[in-house]
Structure formats: structure tokens, C-alpha cells
Amino acid sequence: MTSDLHIRSLDDFPNNVSTYEPFKNQTFQTCDGIHCYPDSVFHAATILTIILAIFGAFGNVLTVLAIMTSRLRNNINSILICHLSVADVVYCSFVLPLQAMTFYNRAWILAPVLCELHAALRIWLIGVNMVLLSTIALYRFLHVVHPQIYTVYSQSPWFIGACILCWALPFIFCFTPLVGWWGEFSFQQRILQCTFSITSSKSHKISTITAGYVVPCLFICFCYARIGFVVFTSRTKVSKGSQYRRQRARRESFRLTGMMLLIFLGFLIGTTPFFTINIVDSKLVYPMPHIWTPFLAWVMYSMNPVIYTIMDANFQRAYHRLLLCMIFKPDNVAETSVAERQNSLLAAGKNVENTPSPK
Image (tube, rainbow, N blue to C red; front, side, top):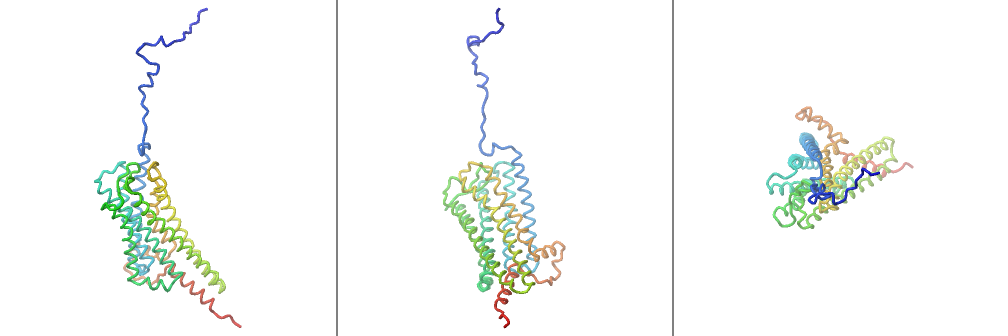
């Protein structure tokens, strides 16, 4: 019985046809960097950047106007918050729109010199934010822990000098790359950002991150930890007084602790991932973390008005007067900051401690 099956051997194929011919015409395309990701990722980044730019610019402009049109302009902490809002207005109005344009086009379409200026402005404003946050922590620390020293350094010459230093000190790390003295800024295609050049000296990047993030972070942690210790100690002392003082001490300490927690969360959550990925992945091997971690910092810049005002009735009243166009009417309500209320609380605790006990 003859089988109908016929096993084909190599001799059955034509000489000009290879058994692997179907694989010859197949090309295995590889992707690199941002080309590995779909367009939807960059469209989402563009839209989110535009939303944060609009929301951040509007909220911080509102904060600046609320401070300048109320009695808050006479308060040191409020003035520093006003400087912080001004820096965030510039960041949201200039840095974020250009970054959104870059996400949309997946390239820098403007002149290279504008890319260097964009990077310098970005790094400068980040540094200004960090130094201003440190200065706010310093003045709160002096107000609570060393009120006599606070009185000296809150005078106009010292305070004006501190404000100028907040803007001038970070500019040093942005000016040297622009003139070619130290460091270099360029467009990094892998992460779609005008930032530090990976081919330039690492010393500038390391020094900038250390001076702009590590040192301010440690300083702020020290200031608020010391404030928390003093608040807890004063609360213990005041608790020996009347029931009213005990309730007031508890309320004020909770308020201050809540504000400190918001400041820490906004500061750490917003900036730590950005600086960490720049140190860990300095060669830009993984582009997506470099693209998305700055969004946390941008959210922080947009939410700063909420973080610094949600727990302060003075800012709430200033916003209310501004939005209702009541800024030209006299505001007869005395405005006091949380630090001032805390200072009064400490003074009350000392009075209770120094009051002689009845015999």
C-alpha cells in the first residue's frame, strides 16, 4: 500500500529559494528613548502641564494681590510668602508653557540660546523657592525660639538684605553655565528638557543639587524640629494653668503642627523624587522618570497658596476681601500670624511658670 504522504527533502526546493527566505524580509525595529512611548503619553503631559501653568499662575497672582492689598503686607512671613508666590508666577508663566510646547513637539523648536535661558530660569526659580522656604523656616524659628534675635533681624535693613539674598544666591549657579565658566545647559532629547548637559563637568550639577536641595532640606528639618520641641514644652507648662489656657495651647499646637506637616509633605513629596532621579540616573538611561517627576514639584508650586493659607484666617479674610472687591474699604480686624499667636502662647506659659504659688 503506497502512502500518499511525501516527505519533502531539501532537493525538492528550487535552488534560488532558501528555507529561511520569509525571515530575510522581516526587519526588527528597535526604539530608543522617547520614541518607545505612544503619542498619548506626551499629549497627556502637554495637557497636564498647561493646566498646572494656568492654575499655578492664577493662584499665585491671587496670593500676591491678597497680600499687597491687606494688612498682611506688614507681616514678615506674609512678605516672604509673597516673594515665593512671585517666583511661582514666573515659573508657571514662562517655564511651564515652553515645557508644554516641548512635550507637544517632542523637540525644542526654538533657538538653542533660548533653551539655555529656559534651563537657567528653571534652575534659578527652583533655587529661589528652596532659599525662600529656608528663610521662612528661619524666621519662624527665631520668632518662637529666640524672640529677641528675631526682633533685631526683622528690622528693615536685615530683612531687605535677606530677601535680596534669596533671589541673588541661586542666580550664581545659573549664571556660570550661561557665560561658560562652570557647567553647561543644553537640550536633552531623551527627556525633552533643557537642563544640565551630561557631557559637562559633574561638579556643577552636584554642587547645585547639594546647595539647592540637600542643605535647605536639612536646615528646614532642623528649624521645624526645634520649633516642635519648644511648642511641646510650652504646651506642657501652660497646661498647669487654667482650663482656657490648656485648650488654647492644645488648639494652637495642633494648628502649628498641622501647618508644619503640610509644609514638610509639600517640600519632600514635590522635590525629593526630582533630585533623586537626577542623581541616581545621571546618564538619562530611563527617560520616563525624568519626564514625570518634575510634575510633583509643579503641583507643589501651584498648591503653595493653599498650603500656606488654608490654616490661616488672615489669608482667608484677605482672599475674601479681594474677590469681593472690598480692598478699598478699611479692614479694622487686627491680623496676627500663627507665629505671633504662638509667641503670645509662649509668653503666657512663662507668666504661669513665674507666678508665685499661694502659701
